[in-house]
Image (cartoon, rainbow, N blue to C red; front, side):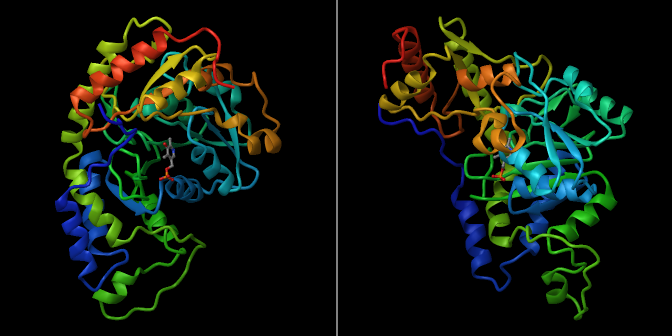
Length: 384
Ligand SMILES: *Cc1c(COP(=O)(O)O)cnc(C)c1O
């Protein structure tokens, strides 16, 4: 069998056609395609307002700014995520305060949050790791007790539900990513969603310099002068990117069903393999099935990773914990042992290919190779 890529996107001819129509039209920046995408995305997520931006990092940054979080403030988050999550807190001028994760899901451990709250704490920023929602009921309850804002990093989790609530439903804002390897993609892109009209109005201004009219207002209506009531950023999504996403939003559930089927094959094929563990899917929850990860012996992880690559299986590591990245160690003094559960997952995890264009034959091939490599791996790291 030939190479199994780590990821292949789901852009179809109809999506390319929509982009072509935009490119042949006069209006390229934020306009009708963005509006259509925002309406479709809101109706999928059941979140009233969608504000399309250039990345999830921008969505997180603006969410913090919209709640007046900055210099001198602390935001509680997880070390088991992509660095963008914590970086956005620093972009806002605040300080990220990490709390360790649950061993069986990798998600922020709600039991540990209260011990990390100080008088400077302004928000909790959970990440729905790999597509599985955190315990949002518990997190919201803690936040309400301490009057904190809740911002969800839902980059992995557009389709997720848990305890009868969907992503973003009980948060102040939820942030999504349409980066190249996410469940739907425009290459780069993001969105911030909220049920609060006032927050939505502020976010709409903040994504475009803080000005109160956009280019489409000047183009479609009688010329009006704009003012700039607040200082914003340049984070607005354009019509070209939005056009790529519209069809993908319509196909979200179809794409999810294909990943769910592959996920079940992986679970069946890899459960009980010696030297390999799988994270738990919470019962009764809808997992967005974004990343399928296995946990192996930390001493062998890198050499297993290299063996899989040599056998032409695309792999990734999601993630080595944020607090141990050089900048975080040097700036905040974090060190090994600070968040042991995140560190354990970080040195054991390997992500396998998971996307709708992965055939069942390819998935079975991945299972065979993974079993072979993990079960017969020498006990010591062979490379280096
Ligand atoms: C991809 C990702 C981000 C960043 O998304 P961008 O759109 O690239 O800014 C943030 N958080 C998590 C958990 C991610 O996986």
